[in-house]
Length: 397
Image (cartoon, rainbow, N blue to C red; front, side):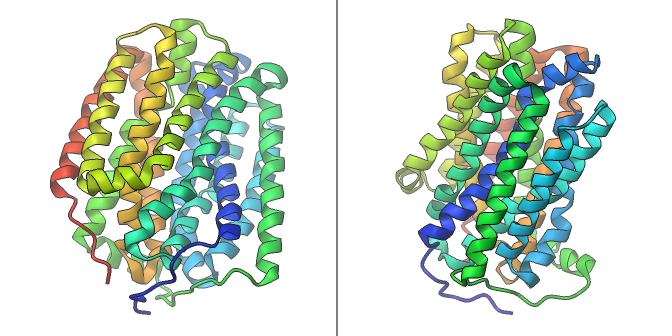
């Protein structure tokens, strides 16, 4: 099916709220593991690197199962798949609260990631269906407020609740939230207010993906987002453990500090229209990568604990300057199969995260936190410079 040259002008407010709530839950249950790693490590008497399986397993499944959901979203309807995935993710979170061993918890987190991974990329693909390219980066930035709030609440509430009701209680809370969102989305679908754009495609998934990766632009965008996930989240996942082990902070304090990452991202969303107009796509990736590098290098220097308020806030703003640009390019790299394209994008992002967490955990056990954080900062700056030179404007037809 050819791409429509003039898609509808935007996402209705009711749909923005519903999809934002789904994105909130997806991001929250993804990032909730970060402040829980130290407590899980202590309860099961395992090293921090082993306890990080609760993050690695989820992010790996979150990415890998995009291969399935992209095809489902293009054929069955993106919002339909999101509603079903939200329901199953709620059940997975509740099951995680009952785990009696680290291996079982890791397995349940993997299952939860299998379903939660469908939500955000399919929602962004839906935005691409209903929003013209020239307005798309701003609309996606607004939609991301749900995801960013999920990061804020997932990390902050995760840390605070873990201190008082334990990590099991944290999973119960997010399981209930997922089920509530699933019910709201189901009601919205039943009302008939959501119009879904479906694309016919070959039944051979392997053939579809071969067609996608035959494009040089697709390879550039998904390769960049893999490296971004590997470097940034692979390292950022261990900031909680860094604060716990180096600064001896409580989980309450760590959760609240990590929330400043999300607040920085919200600051970008508020300023997105002006920042995009001022810097353009090339300036966004260069500035984002450069500022992230400075923040990571400052963190690695073991500054006073209070300075992490500023550093984590800065990370949130700078990361989304780079990532929002890649997301927008992702919606246009395969407009004839947008859900499939965004699924490949998300697969590369989260497989990159999982690989990065594994690599960073291995390095942290051997070299310590500070060299790992500093090295990631330098490499992120290189990525930003590379994208500044290579990321050409996307074609809109």
